[in-house]
Length: 121
Image 1 (tube, rainbow, N blue to C red):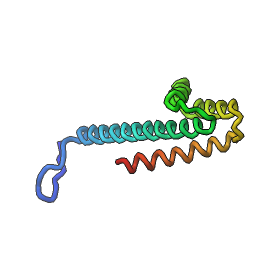
Image 2: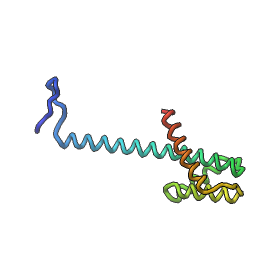
Image 3: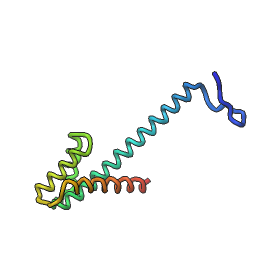
């Protein structure tokens, strides 16, 4: 087994398999952190989106409406069910807004959610 020596003469690590295992573990941790961050950003975005839509359609029961939006997301992973739910609710309330405007709002709120998460630490 070959060990890498540092400039001060100490061993810098173990076997090549040990180094590979450490790298794999580091990559897995990084992936988990990114996945968790993505989840938190999306959850914040959905809360902001639900609040925005609730105000437009005149819903005062924000927590109930937010639960409805989240339930739509749970039916199908991704943004499409949330998008369809919001657009449908806006149309049912006769709010004159295009589907494209809703998509743009979703993008804007996603960026806002990411910034607020970064600022929160």
